[in-house]
Every structure is written in C-alpha cells, then in structure tokens.
Image (cartoon, rainbow, N blue to C red):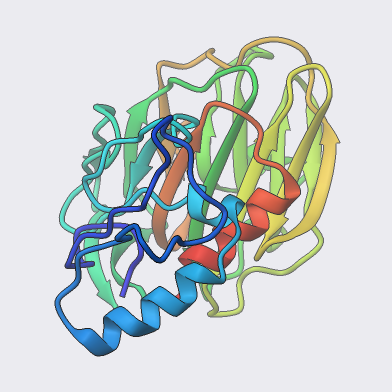
Length: 272
C-alpha cells in the first residue's frame, strides 16, 4: 500500500507540537493517528516510533495539505486516480496516450508508451529545487551525448536558451542538462526494477542525482532560473521526439534542495 496517495485508507495524522513542528519520536500521551484495524495499527505505530524527524517530515499523505514543516513540498502527483496535484493546484494534463494503469507492486501508476504519452504541469520550478519520482522500465534508452538526446523523464527544454532543464535516461543511466552543464549517473536503470530518483539543484553551485537513496552523479548547476518553458513535461521530449517508455509514480516537486539524508529518508519512506 502507498504511503502517499488516495489508495491508502485510512488517513494518518502526525502528532505535532503547538508550534507546528514534528517531534522526533512518537509521544505515548499524544495520539498519532486514527486507524481501522488493530493489527495494522500496532505495526505502524512501531514503525513510526522508530522513524527520525527527517523521515516523518517527508510524509504528507493523500489529500492532506502541507503544514508548517512540510512547505518545501509544492507539488505531488501520485496517479492514484488521475493527474491531480495532491498538495497544490498544479494539476497535470494528460498528453497523447498517457494513462493510469495498475502495477502489481505500486498500485496505480502513470504508464508512458515511449511514443507520445506524457503529462504536462506548469513550470513553477524555483532556482533551488528538488524533484523526486519512482520509475520503472525494461526498455533500453536512447543513446547520445547529453540529456536532450535521451528519453525524457522531466523535460523543460527550449531552443537556444540556457535557462531550461532536462532529466532523462541516456545510455540507460540518468542524465541532466541545464545552462550547458551536465550531470550523469552511473547505474543502469533499465532492469525491470522500480527505482527512486531524486534530482537536486542548488543555483550557482551543484546538481546532484540520487538513485535509491544513494548519490549516483553530480555536476555544475549554472547560474539563474530554469523557467525558459511554461511547462514541465513528464515522460517525453516533444521537441526532439524522445519519449520514456515505462512507468512513473509518486512524482514530487520541492522548492529547496533536499539533503542527502532527506533523499535517503524519502526513498525509505515511499518504497513498497
């Protein structure tokens, strides 16, 4: 069952201090949640007590709006029923043959056919940002020199502009391009396994790529915004006609750079 998304019923509500902060540990005299089945309740309680604050702070669930401590998360697309933004108003628009299908491991996910399917969202990417997503494919990617040649996971590219960005699978590995600066991963991700991907960018400094909670590549970030396009497209690069063939799930957008510890915590909190 997903920790994020409408497929997870019942709802979970974290205990917070009066100032809205999350305690590092569950407090016995403060109810953490309302649940239906006692056995599941007991198991989840044990899990929550063992979580650190970084893990807990990354778990806004279902239709719950971000609260103090969660405001870095500005968009979340879980694809449980549609392309709705679970935490904001940046709802996705399906393109081509993009559809929601049921995956045996992750439940409802976004299916991308490698030809025309995708989802567009408004480009609200901040100068410092993070994107996170789960991806699955068993198809070898395009080959080439940089991310524009690859099968786009996140595409916001514009002709003759530096202030754009693309995250793609290239030569079966992660590849990022922005401001003519590149970052490349080392792990092959076309192995029929669900992988968690985190992209972070700190303006004027570094870009980092994480796979399954571990640093997989990095590079220079360039300087300035990445708002050359009005949209960010998931699953496809319509300009060059390079589309990702596989499945995406639980896409998240943050308005700051996630730390290595937070990238790891998000992977652990959302894997199934």
